[in-house]
Image 1 (tube, rainbow over the protein chains, first blue to last red):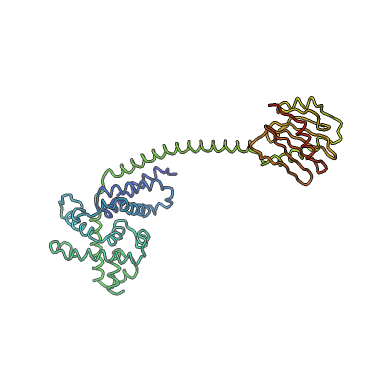
Image 2: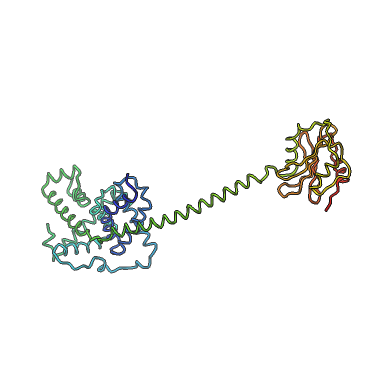
Length: 171
Length: 237
């Protein structure tokens, strides 16, 4: 018999990373992402008894996080006016070639329209199936599949249009 | 599965394990190569998405929850205390209400109920008689005095008239006993100057501090009783 506390801590340890990354890709800011994850887990703690199926925990948390994110926009509509596209990716000094590549791709992903990037992140990062994503985003599955197709298509085209790094990405 | 369909399927889900997609890859090497390309792209996307998670995030999350739990518990004990207090107050009020509120709303209803309750106790032709002196002794409690007897007084004693100490007199009537109540005035029961049911009639007289209620059967002239009472009862102030 697990206590609520033990369940909660297990949930935090297992899923905080995925949730933080997902939050980061939703809002593109480290601090905001951290706040979102904190709010999400706090709400999750309060409602932990309603989580019956541990397998559904991830999508449950992501749903809470998305709602929390939407609430953020309701709360501070003015703070969130505009951000510089250039400032949204992380600015740590890039060293290896791999880092450079990641950095560049991150830039491209954050330039995708959110309706394309969100399902992509859920699929790649969260490992959700098309049906799961459709349920989380409240869309039908065909729409999700189309958006996933467009997201990858755009990224691939961007990669191919980048002559400087062309050699690396051209498979 | 044609090329376009295949490409769409792979773009949408590079790890597509549908039978169609697998079969198409096996049949056509170029499709297989395309699928591998997209898998590589996906691997890169995956790596790019792996932004570093702050090391202390777990600790922060657990700390925040612990603090919140603590606050909730503090609030809960306060709420429990408030609840217990509310329940006690409501309980007290209900008890109070049940004990001290009357089931009857006016003098008449209560008087009739009271008469029926004691109907069998005194027979109309009983031989016992209460003297005027002992009646007046009791009547002194209500600051009243009978100058003369109203008739043959069969029985006289204090009783509880809806919780109020009152005087209960039973006189010999024409066919059945006539009951007279002397009741202190009270807000709880509204005054009703005449009332009746199938067998009994009653009327009330209002004085300064008391009401006098006469209840008798239909053969009695309540008017005469009232007149008699008004003439023979005097009140000291």
